[in-house]
Length: 119
Image 1 (cartoon, helix red, strand yellow):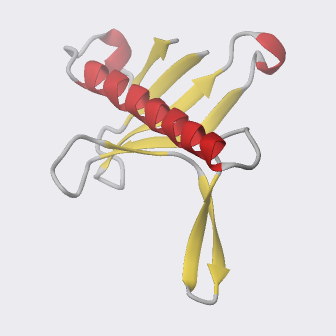
Image 2 (cartoon, rainbow, N blue to C red):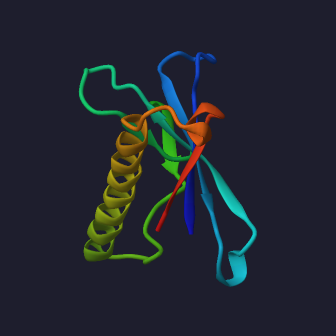
């Protein structure tokens, strides 16, 4: 799998730093990519925030969100905890790799607005 970052260079919205695509290089998903993840400037001034795809739905109390990236395990609280840790680790990986790319000198690949990190 390879993670591609499409850097935002002045396009709207201004607080969006990059779009993130996950390109699959092996197995049954080879040749496909997953889109919808993004890196945003934090409103609180801390490190960048990583958003993963979700869907909204209406409830009596307002709007709620259904996270599309979650544990594949069904049931119990132990599996939920492992799934939450895996999602947190994924977000941290995306954040760390983005910070490495953001601190690189402007090379040919980053000038075009697209760069990648393998995993």
